[in-house]
Image 1: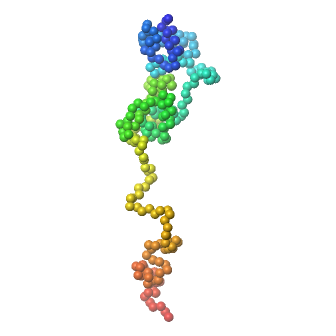
Image 2: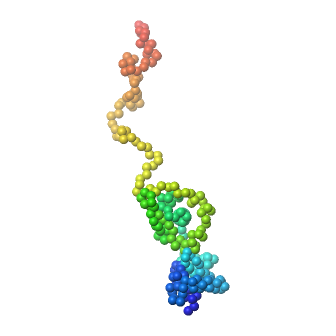
Image 3: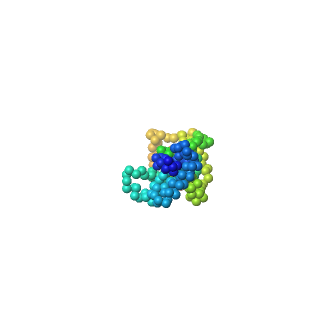
Length: 253
């Protein structure tokens, strides 16, 4: 068997990219360098024959895939495996992790402005991200990073093929200033008011409200409109001008 035939057979049988070292295990006569040469020969042959497939470099491995221009024809068949479709929220979260990894869930949510627990779980199930460590802050939060499957999913050789950071929106370029808080910590809303311990709260069901409080003078008012001037004076209240005149001059008979 020629090396190109062995390499081609290994790529056709594999459902995931293979590195030259992995392909070389197929036969004792193969070495990683000889596999690289065979890959180049196969690529040239596919181009000359205008085949509907080609060998693509994904991450550090190689895989035979159908050319993108044939996708509309293959979409008509239910038996053809389709690439997983990511929602806008998943793409947004994945972009943040890709450019800011390793990063914690709280930092992701600070950038997005919404909760991201469900999206992170989905990305982990698809093996696009994984936990790569723990942070040094309070609570030692989990830190997320991308996996090799990310490169396979988007057909990238490495992360250097992505747009440069300075070409991205400002939200991804901002410095990380978020203080990590453990998930179990309870945060008091900003609008909450601190009530002193000595404050007395009247129960809603309190009874015994004075009758004078119902539409009349308040209980702690210094004057009572029904009191006579003499009673008001005894209570330390001030007399109205008319009452002062009556107190100084005797009433006419």
